[in-house]
Image 1 (cartoon, one colour):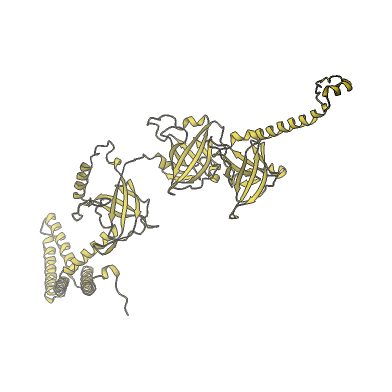
Image 2 (image 1 turned 120 degrees about the vertical axis):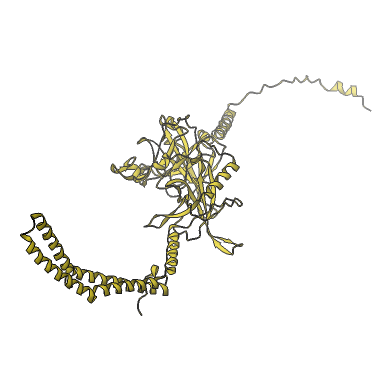
Length: 557
């Protein structure tokens, strides 16, 4: 076995190793990828932070819109661009995608409106002429602040933009739109102070909701008791002063218009109306000047005759003063009477009768109405225009009306009615015919005939002629006596005798058979006899055909 110590003696000693730590130096080569990475990250972060919203807008057509070319602008400042155009699911519309800048986020909400600006020619307005050279673009109106949104429906017609403008919006309610259009002017004392922004149907479809904007400082004149009316066209009035034509302006004749004012300056004006205050839009100035009675009572009427010419909106009048209007005219089958009835529903403005609200108690009002009906209060159909046949409901007192009462049971109380004017005329004619039938016309004719015959016999009697001859002879003898006494009597007696002679001569002329008096007397008796015969023929005709007094004589076959 070898000794390990003996081996170490033979191997020379080696020096000890020394360990040195080498220092690592940064190579400049790595600066390029690091800088590139930092710049790329910064660009990514910047792109993400500055990335604007992406929205979709639905239009009926893509006319004038091109991908990557059509701009999105607000107040003529570019804020985005169209990135794509696709069809909708039902191919009835197109969907336009647009990328907006970051700053545009504050403009976009659920109330934002978009539309395409292109050259347009409308009534009284030419717009978008600049797009003939620069091309169409999409414009927007931010509207009021609202919840964030990214899908919108574009407008077909550019709206009236009032965002950011000094003034106030107001809501007008009317039964019809008339000739009003978006952009129609709003006038205050014939000064243009605003315009119609939009209009739509109410939820129930019974009203037109119009939205107008009144510029400052004119909005301070819109008070709580201000009245608005449709000032479209012109009004023609004919009165004692002649013919007058009223209009707000030439533009209102062509484009329509709305006017407002305080129609009753004696009433307290009230405070300034708030934003989006609701007003009623009257059809014309005269209607706006009428006093408003908010309290109405509803009544139902049943007329026995036809109601042609009576339509909803027809006036209800008392002594010529309108107190309400007709609301509805319908057909209704009555199972109790097994007949079809025509109920007419009317509204009466109660405050016209009780301006001080003196009869607010329902029972007091019922007692009053029952008392008035007992006095003859009735509703009657009357023709207001004989050319068009238009009818109205007239409420008045008819003392000779049959007794009746108000039917308070039912949805609306039923007010008794009186026959129409033509019906009353027919009833009077029937009563006249009934009275004529009761007259003894034949007996009257016979008596009249006997009287005429007796008169004729007396006139042509020989005794009467003989008496006239005797009287004539007596006159001649009296004349001879007058001649004899002429020289013997005084002038007074002579004059008296002369007057007596003239009187006797006139009597002889009258009683002679060929005198004009006798001729006229005979002619009058003949005409009287003819009248008697005609009266008998009339009596026979009425006896056989009583309705001939209305229908006339039947033609001979």
